[in-house]
Length: 68
Image 1 (cartoon, one colour):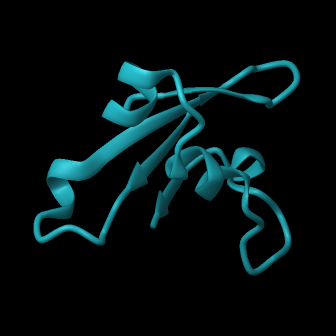
Image 2 (tube, one colour; image 1 turned 45 degrees about the vertical axis):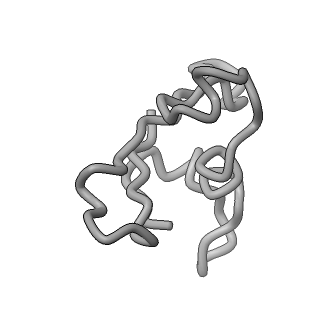
């Protein structure tokens, strides 16, 4: 589970979502954002979790928080 905050909005606290991962494979499974919930679409929060950070590891391996 990774908590993602979208800081592009005036009130980022209203735009915090949880991206869940498969515990075995660490594949992305779901996001709590409206785009994924209502459309079952791959969302930007899932992309943020998969995108490598400055140390070259994806957020799925960090299992923590990420701001986008």
